[in-house]
Image: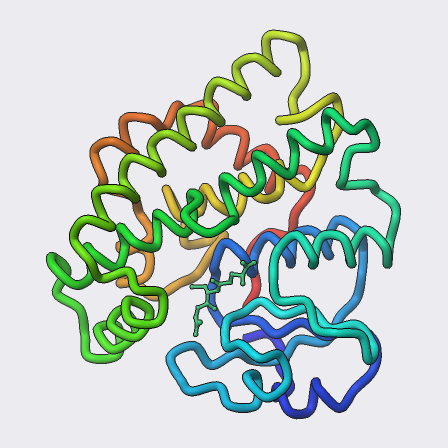
Length: 259
Ligand SMILES: N[C@@H](CCC(=O)N[C@@H](CS)C(=O)NCC(=O)O)C(=O)O
């Protein structure tokens, strides 16, 4: 296990601190990926998912992770704020495109992955629905699924239907985008170089098909829950999308994942 300090201790320190869960999650892995590419060192603080997280609430007025804290500035709790801060702390390599068209496209598409009701939000709805209805979970896993269902109001049947359609739509949109980029000779989702969108895609795709155990060690129940089985989503996943995830991890991100 990586080294973590407590949230309370992190709050009292200066420099860059990141509150993270001790398991892979798309928001957390995206932020870790961005910091890794930019070679920004940070101290990890442990988010014990499934607990009341009172220290985190007192500090950040919310209880999800990741949280990114720089000196005594306001802690950043949302992915786009975190990206802006990372870009400010290390401008190279640039992960936000310079041209307005590419920048607007990148934030729009990133929001389709990371924003409320976006891809990973919707995949979480589906995973929770599956956990609550189908899987034989152990007591700890069941408690976690119920906790997340109630925290994010995910345990509603119509919500699963909406999530399935949205997730499939987003995956298909990324498939078309990647095809167009490949056709014009680019290996990246936007323009001709790595942007944060490629990292968000790589980390999000781990909720469609997790990286193999030797690259991402996680409890079996979590691996099963993270492997998409919704027929609409499965049908939308083209091999090129998973190849893109593998390319980004292999060339730019830390492997194996550590938490
Ligand atoms: N606030 C983040 C999303 C973070 C998020 O939803 N984190 C979840 C991942 S499952 C979490 O920490 N859940 C556990 C908990 O809230 O205790 C963002 O919008 O960028």
